[in-house]
Image 1 (cartoon, rainbow, N blue to C red):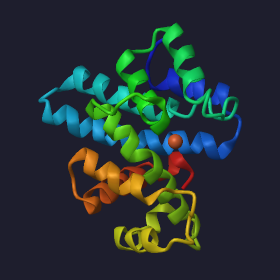
Image 2: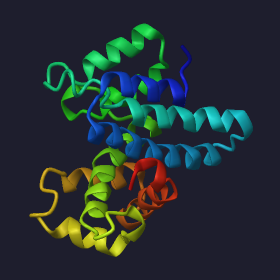
Image 3: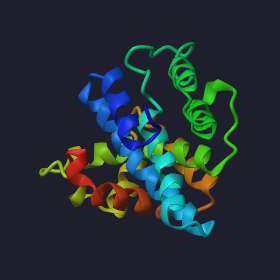
Image 4: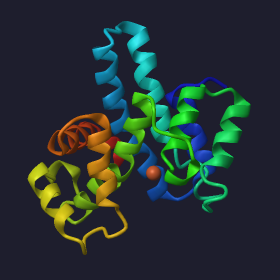
Amino acid sequence: MGFGRDDAMALLKEWTQGESLRKHGMAVAVCTESYGRREAERLSLSGTEAEAFSEQYACAGLLHDMDYERHPSLEEHPFVGVAFLREKGWPEPMLHAILAHADYSGTPRESHLDRALFACDELAGFLTACALVKPTKSILDVEVAGVKKKMKDKAFARAVKREDITGGAELLGIPLEEHLGNCLRAMQERAEELGL
Ligand SMILES: [Fe+2]
């Protein structure tokens, strides 16, 4: 087994039967991958190096909740998944990010990948919720202004922690609006794949 996007996708499908949790992993992955591409550019990486760099971001997104269906408790998620992935030899920076996405893990958010995964997790869920209330149920009909409005509506997608979205933008060092736009565009570009 390798450590690429296809391997991560296969693991996600193996561990997660639920369609919505699978789709959540995929949605987070397209968002984190877009930040990986940006960061690769900032680091002046190119070619296969840049591709491998952003692929690790995609894999972190795909796998961050991999164990959640089987092991949803705070004692087990994401520790069981990370232990499995570590045993298989997946790269440590990705495992660090998966641990750090959980507030209670005790793993601090240090690297850009750690910060990107945390920043995209709740937002990808929120953007999905924004799409699903559209008559078309399509992410293509979602706009940043509408997302901002919905963030203020406490009754909408109540489980999504707004402070994780705003805190994520802060962690990435960009304005909230830019973060919303980045993730929205990333999901729109791959709407078909995400079934949105
Ligand atoms: Fe998640």
